[in-house]
Image 1 (cartoon, rainbow, N blue to C red):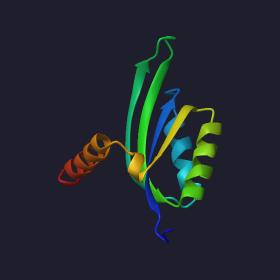
Image 2 (image 1 turned 180 degrees about the vertical axis):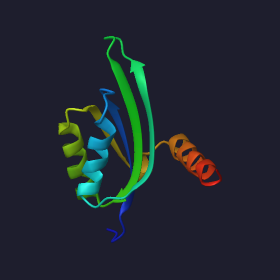
Image 3 (image 1 turned 90 degrees about the horizontal axis):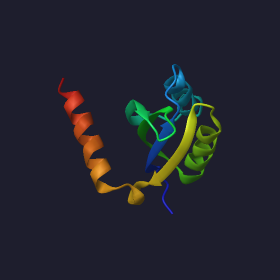
Image 4 (image 1 turned 90 degrees about the vertical axis):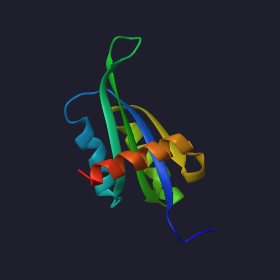
Length: 108
């Protein structure tokens, strides 16, 4: 067991309405969790024809805090689906792409 928080990746499917991102960010802020990366895409119509957004967030937290955070995120009206992945469960390609976007933005 480690005394260090682990890296987590949360992938959210949202309803893609104004204010949804703010509601999601407030869940992190209200719990004192710093978001490491935040990548989002909106207006991706699903088979039902409803617009859906996708948000990918990374952050560091202990497992119990992450589970609680994911439960709160799932309870938001703005969120249709939550997937929480621990460091070793995060696909290497996603980690690489998130790091690349972060590095690119740092040079702008």
